[in-house]
Image (cartoon, rainbow over all chains, first blue to last red; front, side):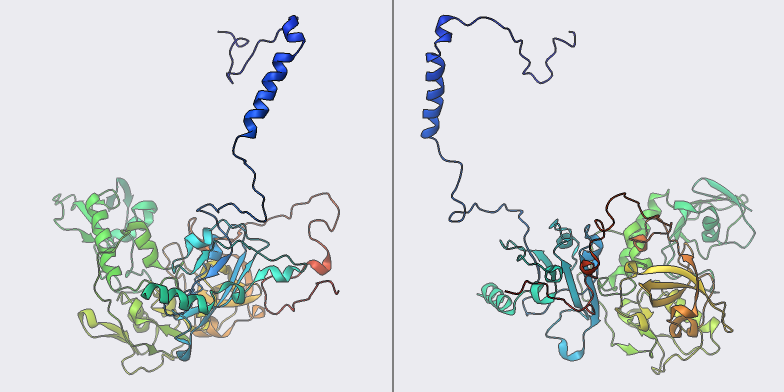
Length: 180
Length: 341
């Protein structure tokens, strides 16, 4: 077989400049065919949705905003090991560790905790590698619809512990749910 | 004397151990060592990590040795043939030894300051198993204070005795040793007296795990976020040759220079290690190099990188001066740019 006759895509067609017959030239059959296609689509299911009122379900692997989890006693799980920052391809995570004092044992699970934990949401690409790297199951990417709020200053996109740590009420609710 | 290790032949002096001969060859056939330290006399023979198979005793007596031998304390014989990584018996034994060492070792690498430069981490990564079969309670000790400079975590200790030998051989009077037996054996200063010796800081470098760590570096950073530099200063007590672990312009930690087997090249004094945390005190020679696959190499550029020139408008890449704020630093004041309505 020569290269001219081979159709790699399987859609190669020989075109011809042949003259149309009378039946083709009056276009009635062609118009009827086209109208039939239109008519068929009128009874099909719509593919669009009216967006703000209706929303589509998220994919199972959807990754939204980060959250620093608390354990079932409400203590922060994060121990500032730095593996999330190490794995982050966008270098969005920074942290500073501190030592837990004796009267903070109800606040932090481990001897060491993250005093400062910051994610630059402008850099974050939501790849979820921090979640995978975390040995303490502390950081998770939640299914939140709102990822970041719009703002005009760059500083407001650097999320600190106030934005990231799980709210205490949520931790209490979770514990009650698991105990029930 | 001629020795063959994993099929590689080498001529060594009489009195060399198998481990030293293997290190002369280098490469993958070097057995791992947790307790042996070439700079400390009498060390070795305790951790059993360096077990090798001697398949031919010597030229005079070619019978193989029936048991696996600890290569760090077994001297070579003429015509000896040794199998290290090439023997399945040896790899199996190393797996078991690693499992034994990890039995009482807590899984607190995320908290431990040694993580990233820990010999036990490397050993279990290279020679260990993924899972543990040990479900019993791990041995724990009461925390003990060793003064302002050294932090002791007895739970992490694998009883390699390296620090005991350091205290014995570098310092005048040994103030700490191993007390108790078997499962209760622990490193202690006996009377909880702080170690005040001028060279006591070397125990930190010598420790293969995170049992003895630098208290001035405690929880400051992880080792792979630091930039290590080779540096020296004129010290009247020691050689003054060190590695500085920097974060920005701050010296977070000073250690001795370690070679490829994580053994210090020269011991340094406590003054160099703990008291000189100012960049002006040091002459920085250049970036320190590490093994190819070490995590310390992360974000560490040992070769000079030229800035890339892109011919475009001047401000386009870096942004305007007033927008170029340092991110993620607490001491930068937050400027509110929100439009006033």
